[in-house]
Length: 470
Image (cartoon, rainbow, N blue to C red):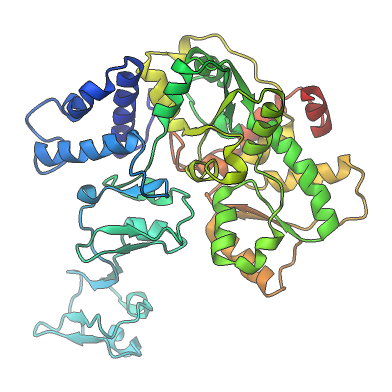
């Protein structure tokens, strides 16, 4: 059974599992310093130059698993001592350079940044180079490469730079907490804070009911078990009940469709990283962000209107949700957030084998609410919502954006009033929520799994699903 797709992710999981195990047993404070030794018990290093550095980094990972630096408002943090001084980046000449006579690289460089050493090998003058890449394109040997740090390459909003010690630094004013850098860092030096201790505290000490709200992307996770077994496992952890964020998506789609028809142009509000991106990079378009809360917050609000004293934990694939739930307009409804990675760690910390559990039914949302999890799903749901509400005089021209690069293009066109569309569906992660940073696996996801999960709903329409809940 393979739960994770990299050793970095597995290491993160082992730390989360051990922290959770100690917390359940109420022994965390007395054993917290020993957790690195529990994970690396031998005297030989398994990942780093020496076992002492390895354990020092693990100690920092333990801190992150316990909530991280409270002075840093971002849920994404850099573990300085784990950052392995990757090349700063830029175009470099490799040993593949043959010192050829053509010198195409020199001819194509408009800044005169390329010269040749005594062996006629190309040399790039960094003070003149403007990183245009023209030299790399014309080199017949492919000897010139662009050495971009994985974290920098993955950050589409250019929030990551390097300090004087070549350690990654995150600019919180630009960061949208999407978590792309978390998965792409090959040393695991960038990671997301965990709030599993808060969740364990609720489950063990709360006098009120504790509910889980699960993201519809759960259908693409835990491939070794059925979704119904995952729901059973969540209840076995101590949650009193489990609700679908997809029902909140039904509610949002119905309201968003009406808002769109009234305003004429709108951007979606379901992805917190996308919403943050609009506010930070395209502030002039912020007024067009849907005024609806996200599906997570919408269903939580609905629940708390009926049970004000209950506690609600969101479970999903998204690191940006860890930022969203702390916003003033959301914090009154959502008490904490954990990812699917953290849910797996919680299961194993209590030795819960979800494969052995009987399926629990989770049947409240419609097909359209559930497909919010994949790119294009929000647009399909809004189209359906327009039809269900009899809004026939509005011509929907949806622009589904799969990933931040696509979002940027659509927003740029919208800012210049040349976008051929009136509804921007923004998804920061590739594929939509099924590609979130907190997923168990990060390879290409089969969107058909989400559609299949949606078709299992007994509600024929969004209106049906909402009326049953009410």
